[in-house]
Amino acid sequence: MRKVAVITGPTATGKTELGVRLARVLNGEVVSADSMQVYRLMDVGTAKPTEEEMGGVPHHMIGVADPFEDWSVSRYVEEAVPVCEDILARGKTPILVGGTGLYIQALISGWDFEARPEDMGLRAELEARFDRLGGEALLAELAETDPERARKLHPNDKKRVVRALEIAKSGGSISDHDRETQSRPARFDARYIVLNYADRADLYARIDRRVDKMMERGLADEVRGLLQMGLTSAHTAMQAIGYKEICAALEGRCTLEEAVETVKRESRRYAKRQISWCKRYGPRLDVIFEKEPDFEKAVSLSTDFLV
Image 1 (cartoon, rainbow, N blue to C red):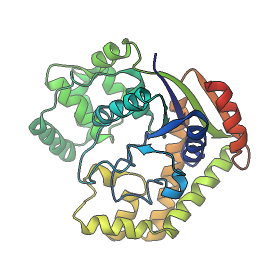
Image 2 (cartoon, rainbow, N blue to C red):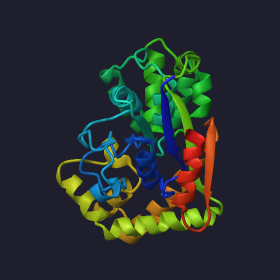
Image 3 (cartoon, one colour):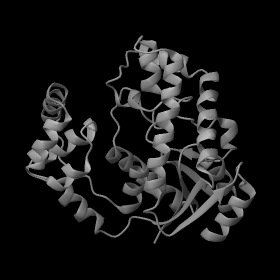
Image 4 (cartoon, helix red, strand yellow):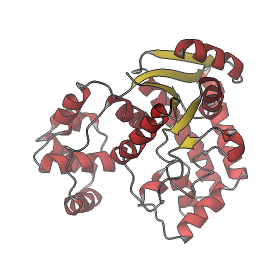
């Protein structure tokens, strides 16, 4: 089966740098697996690698969408699969780098999204009802036809609640669809390298410093520019951590200092969810850093694991 290397783990663990280093060793090319790096004009808050950080290694699936577009996991898979196949056809190794677990799983596992009908009129109606009635009411409605999925969703998760109801009203069930697609053979033979820190406090400190650095690099100006283009908090791109909080500050709903603290807190919470998600991966190599990342060690361990 076609082999793909995956570098993942919580935010701020050094995935980008390890991806570049491994690409050089393995004659590979990097394919981003970050749900927000797909958007153009969103560089600072998504921690997109600079040209210098890319080090001459080809990177794919970065800046491929307009921030007004509503990208989803299905759209990502549609675009990323041909990229990986092209890299393999040229005798190179795709190195999937990022922390969006759902994108990684969908790409590797061969999920089929064609069976998920889309009715934009129905979706708009359900979104309006969500805003009017709240998530609890719509979850109760979903529980009547897909109780399994309803139990797994949070009432504040508007996007997933609406999508599940949309499919349920179209005569389907995400739960049934997921069972069917998960039973299919994997699309690629993946080996997972999961980065983390031995002490959670060290990871959180790195996350906090990263947010401070983003502010120094102009995150507030980046968000201001997106708002001036006409983007609003309703757009998918503006719902990313870092963007929605700074947007709230620029719109006067909180101070900038409060927004920065919220970004740090939400980034730490996101890291916890990423760590939990990574436990499902296998075969997996866990690379655990101490106070600072040791990329020489990481490359050595990863190369032995992958070759």
